[in-house]
Length: 289
Image 1: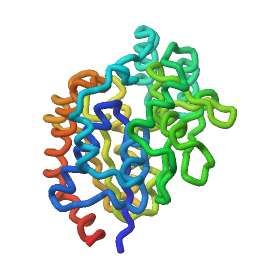
Image 2 (image 1 turned 90 degrees about the vertical axis):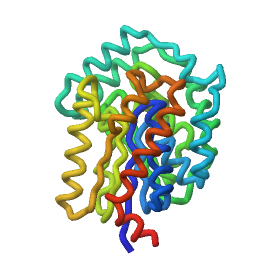
Image 3 (image 1 turned 135 degrees about the horizontal axis):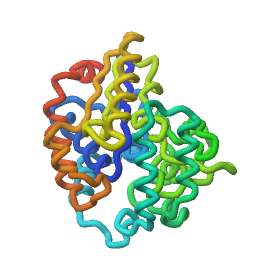
Image 4 (image 1 turned 120 degrees about the vertical axis):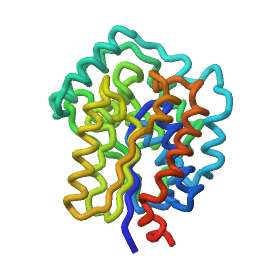
């Protein structure tokens, strides 16, 4: 049987919505990727990937994105210094590659940023995610904010699941680097929005990349990194599909990937795109038949 890996990349709140819709749309069209042998989750992808691994029903996952947001929701009450956050993203977008040194530079800026309280940030994931790691092969990603070293979390890491997800989702300047075992960790997307190299050794790989379709910001860098990762996997013999938001999904997202008012639009745009993608990854249907 074909060994499959599902790679879910970062992309803010609307990245969660779009990726959820993509997976639901594929399922609508007869391609079920929820049972992938490995799930790699970065930032937004760490949320969706963990939900899938925990067995969350797709219809319930989609439904959540159509529901009104609680006025106390974390993304509606972010405490940020906009000028500082813009400076972080401008510096990040200027890099041609993400070395540990470059990741540490972003980390230093993140550590100095004003954000929401760390405990509140970690606690916010209880709304979407159960407290226990799944028994499945799930890898979540983060980056050490001081050293810039890449870090992965699995069920064998001995790390609280919500804390691991919060670290993976700690977008520099928007959310606080998370303390784990005496270190502070920032968003895994600082190293790569997809970290698809963690799917090495798998025969069929689907990379769902919410960031990388736009011509500005960190998207060009994210696109280059994801494309290079996909090409390396193909060179090693894997069948790889790398997908970014199409024109309809980009329109649904607008300019702010944290705009919760667009969740419903984005999950449906993702669903439509997923249905159209199904024919290109028929290997998944064969692998799970």
